[in-house]
Image (tube, rainbow over all chains, first blue to last red; front, side):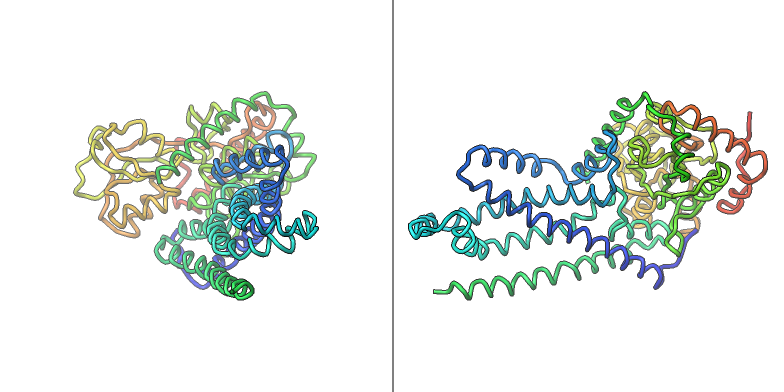
Length: 218
Length: 265
C-alpha cells in the first residue's frame, strides 16, 4: 500500500497550496474590511457601538478559530441552513480576523495624539474627513508591523479549515503522508511552501513601513 | 498537543450532544436521496488500504469500492466526500453526508449517536511494539508510552484498558502514530493488523504483536432513526456478501478472502 513520493505528489501539494492562498485572501480581505469597521466603531463616541464591539471582540478572541469554523459549518447545518464549506470558512475567518485586526487597529487609532483630532475638528473637518485625511494615515504607519504579524499567523492558521473538509496544504500533507510514509520529506516541503508564502508578506511589510515612514519624517 | 487533545474532547462532546439533539429524524432520508439522484458518502482518505487518495488525487480504497457498489445498487450517482476520523460523525449528523462508509468500527459508544448497518469490513486491533518491550497484558503498559490515532477505535480501546500511569500519545492519523514508533519516540503503538502489515514492510522483524485489543467490525453508518435507509443499506450488504463482490474487494485491497467474522451467522 506504500506509494513512492514523486513529482505527482509534489504537484498535489502545490495544488493544495492554492486553497491555502484562497483561504488566506478571504481572511485578509474580509478581515481588513471587518476590522476597519470594528476599529472605527470601537473608537466611536457612541457608547452602545463601543460596547457591542467589545462583546464581539471578546467572543471571537476568546474562542478558538477551530471551534468557530466547526460551528459555522456543522452548527448552521443543524439548524437547517446547509452552508457550503467555502461560505462557512468565509464567515468564520472574516469574523475571527475582524476581531483581531479591529483590536490592533483600535490601538493604532488611539495612539495618534488626541491633539490631531482636536486640531482637525477646529479646522471644521467632519468625522469622515478627519478619519480619512488626518487620523487613519498616521495610524496606518504604526499599524503595519502588528498587522503583518497577524496576517502571517492567519495564513498558517488557515490549515484549521481542514476540519470542515478543505484539503489545503497541511491536510494534503497528511493525506500524502498516509500513503507514502515519508513524513519528514512531506512535512518539510509543506513547511517550505508555507515559508514561500509568508516571506513575501514580511518583505512587503518592510517596504511598506519604509514608504510610510518617509512621508512623515521630521 | 495538550490543548489539541482538549479541543478534540470538546468536539467529540459536541458530536454526542448533536447526536442527542437530532435523534428524532424529521424526513425520510432514503426518499430525499432518491429524489436528489445523488448519494453523498463520507469516507476517510488517510486510512489505507480502506480509504486513501490515489495518484490521480481521487478517493480510492476498500471503502470507496463499497461506496461505488452501494451507489450502483441504489441506481444513484455517487459523491464521495473526504472526511477525517474526528469529524466524520459530525458530517453525518449535520446532514453533510447521507451515509458514512468510513471504516467506522461498530462500538456501543458510537451506536448511541449513529445507527450501524451489518458489518462490511473487519479489522483486528492490537498493541504492537519493539521486540525488547516486555508487554503481554494491558497492566504491563504501566509507566510506558503508547501511540494511537486520535478518536480511533484503538484510541478508545487503549484508553479503557491502560493503567493510569501509562502515557497515551494521540496522533492525527495512523501514519503519524506509526512515524512516532519508527522514529523511536514511542516504543508501543495501538493499531490495526492492516497497519502492522505496513510496519512489517518498513522495518521487517523489528516490531511484534504484544496483545490483541479487540477484533473490530466496521459498519456503514446512517443518521439515527433512518430505518428505511438502514434497511436498504443492509439489503445491499447482504447482496454483496452473497454474490462475492465483497470478497473481491477484500482480495483486491487486503489480499485475503473476506474474513469469516463477516459471514452471516
